Structures are given as C-alpha cells and as structure tokens.
Image 1 (cartoon, helix red, strand yellow):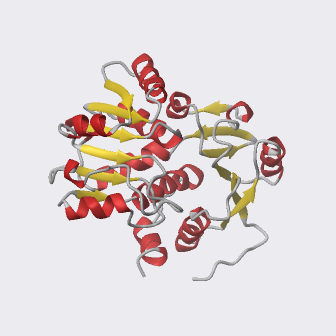
Image 2: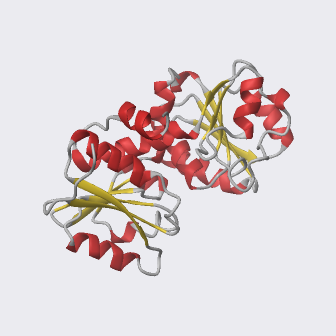
Length: 286
C-alpha cells in the first residue's frame, strides 16, 4: 500500500549527522503504512551546533517524537524534561517521545539487542557475555544485559580503561552483576572466549570500508557451542559472521538489533506493536 501524506499526518524525525545512510526511515515508514497509521518518518541533518533549534522545531511542529543518532545521543539529554532509567545509566538517548510539548528520552539500543537474543532463544541469566569494544553501542548493550540479569559480562576495549569505566558504572548502579574489563588483545580474547557463552562485536571492524577485517584474529578461538553476534548490519554478513558459520557457531547479525530497537521506539511513539515480520519481508528479504 502506497503511503499518502494527508493534512493530518504527524511527523516523526531522526536528528543526526550524517543521516543519509540510515535505514530507519524505511523501517518506520513501512510499519506506519502496514498498520494504516497517519505518521511519516523523516531524517534531518542536525548536529550539536543546531540541536537545540532542531528539537524546538519538532516541538513547534507538534511532532510525535524523534530518534537521535550520532553525534547527538549525549548532547540531547540537557534538552529533555525526563529521562528513562536505562538511558540515565547508559548516559545516552536514542528515542524521544513528545507529549504536550514535554520531552522524555529513552535508549532502545540495548533493549533491541536483548530482544534479538531472546528471539533466538538465548537465556541471559545462564550466559557469560564477552563484548569487544567500549563505545556507545557497547555501553548500551552492557547496561541492558546487566539490568536483565546476565550471568557475567566482560568488556574488552582497545585502551582497557574505556571498558573499565562502563564496568564501574554497572557496579555502582546495578548490584550483584559480575562485570570486568580488560584490554582487547589476542591473549585476552583467547582467555575469555574459552568460557564465554556469547561473543558480541561492538567494534567497527567488518563495516565499510573495513569489510575484510575481523575483531577475531584466529577462527580457532570460536568454539562450536559459542554464540557469535555482530551488531554491524551493513554488510549483512560480516567477515566475523562468515568465520563463525564456518566454525559451526550460532550466528546473530546486526539486523535483529536494528529492527529490535526500531520496534521498541515505534511502540513508544504509537502505543502499537511494530509488524516486524511484515517489515522484514518488505525491506530485507525480498
């Protein structure tokens, strides 16, 4: 069904820089159309220099809400009236709902990741998670895993200290979670992967223009009973994922997290469940 813009159509936005590559407009508009909702999702090039003006414009236009992407996920927080628990712990917001000109911020990145795991039948409380990387995505995922009761979390980062900052935040705010950080070295990977249940790549290795690279240097580190997740969704199949398939591992790509976080944002804005299967069918699996 073709989307028709009416005089009553309400706006949902994406504020970031750059945004031209984003798949969110395709995902959200496909879902709006499928459910017959009179909303339209548009991406706007907005950075920290004009973020205040961009947010005010959406309030003035009576927008339903908006997504926030780089470089605005942290800078948006002082502009909000309220911030959800998980977003406070993460220190970043990716989804904002506007109600009576008031702004409430959420972070659905980590929740989207957890949603993708559960859809694959993975029980968080029984697994040790090893994360490579300590950027915003890793922070979101680690905090949400801790909130959801993960058995153990290890964060391996290039500097080591970056991962430890995330670990300290979790220790201070989510008691009872076993969490540790270390430098991302071949030796640390070998040590931690021996007892890991799930390995998550949160680094850009494998993404354009580094499609030929993998955070795992030796495929032999990937045990057959290890679950390997790569949050990169373009390319759809990364070098790490190919290595994991060859080793017989269960593999989860980044598309699940992308759709998961988008579905949660959709529900925050509309109160409706996103028709995820229909969106997958229309956009990704033709």
